[in-house]
Amino acid sequence: MEFRILGPLAVSRADGRPAALGGRKPRTLLAALLLARGRVVPDERLVSLLWDGVRPSTVDAQVCTYASRLRNALGRPARLLRSGGGYLLAPGGTVDAEEFERLASAGHDELRAGRPVRAAELFRTALQLWRGPVLADVAEPLRAGEAARFDELRLAVLEGRLEAEVASGDHLRAVPDATAFVLEHPLRERARAALMAALCASGRPADAVEVYHDGRRLLDERLGLAPGPALRAAYQRVLGGQAG
Image (cartoon, rainbow, N blue to C red; front, side, top):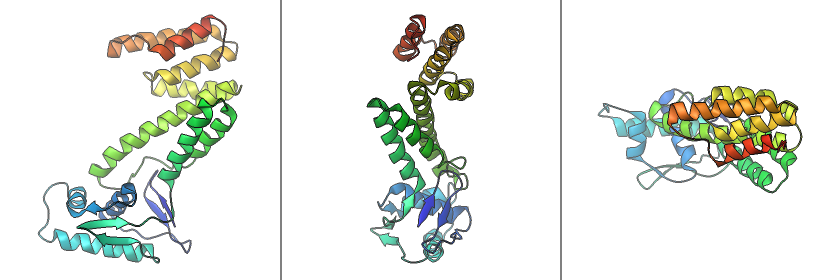
């Protein structure tokens, strides 16, 4: 069975057919169980996610009904279990978010170990799992908190991929991607440092210097901060004629 939350929630059953999950509330219940990774989610937690406001008098019965419908939708072997005043989803199958985190961790390890080609491959594979905004079709109280965490993980993987591409000599690929990233996230110093390295390796040191000074100005105007150690080090490498 395959569970996907890096985008709209979707499930492929063991027989290969997509599971009919129903509306927002059963999807939210299933997403909460997936994110708990085999731990029990108490009834009160589920109720607060499903009814962010006035709760109906039949709230307990409705949670039970949603759980029963999900069991039927997921098919056998049934793994949505009642336990200890809540529900849990017994381990089994694959979850794209867990695979993303595994690939991301492996990519960062490879990059730290000085194997940028392999790191870039792992980062690209991780990013291919994303299909859109995380949990786009579940209740806002759950989506908001989890989306922020996964978005930060994704940005870190994008930055790691840029660094790996530059370190492996693939700077021509890195320049346009890093430029777009920095335009969208101008205060992320790691990405700006990667762009500077890619520009310098492409024979454009003057552009790299300009990217640094743009970042320095933005950090000062928006946050009242000076560039951090990584960005300063990237600037010194550019001045010294080193791309990496």
